[in-house]
Length: 339
Image (cartoon, rainbow, N blue to C red; front, top):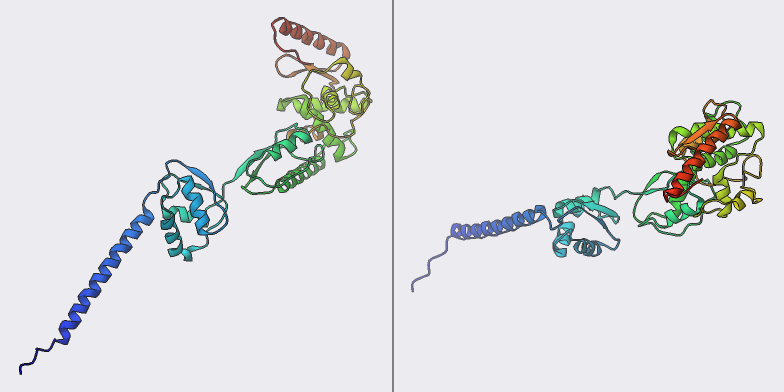
């Protein structure tokens, strides 16, 4: 009986080798395809800021899909798992460039800097107005109460999505405490101010009297000169603060406002009011502690957005007369009249 020929061991090994080469080729092809997909541009058409939530890869993928940053949640999850050795995915608000690939998206989530939002507190706002600004800050969390009047430094503050309002308010209060201490330490000699608190009160008045930076040291000097002579400050913004009971007055001052007996009515009291009337900025603090060298005792609006200054009442009355003429012409032309 004839025997079937034996298979050569070398032939078997050769066939196994061919199979292994095919497997490796297929695996290499799949790896090449996966790498191309990993680095291919994504669907995002324009720069976008996305709040990336906590909750793991699935929750992150859902947020990125809704924002149009990625096109396939499973591909994202697979890429995140395959590259897990590069670090965890973080929850925050991130900015993604247009066409971001999966590689870029994951890099942003792992190493990118969260979006820095900004909140601006303008100079001269009252505590109530500052409270409204902070409460209206988008993306912040938690409740906050109104600060003490004048306790917040007007400035632009950076924050991140999810930060607490109370924490930002503390930063603003600390900034004012620091700025006031520095201004007081560098104050001129012989100021008629007994404490940093008095400097803060006067700076809040100067802040509300003019929007022109170059005028602040001169207006501060007028008030300081009046304090030295025991004259009332006669500042309209303090009367407006009293009339609005600590808020912002939305009407012109009246004679009744000027005649009202109130601790903030500096037409009726001598010296400083008992507290600030708003939040002064750095320039107002410096103006009060380093005032201009002048003997001026009066100022009135000059019709151009600034003020006319005077050393004597006679000169001041002439300036007031000119201002009244400007007011009269404006009224005749239908323009609003201001004090």
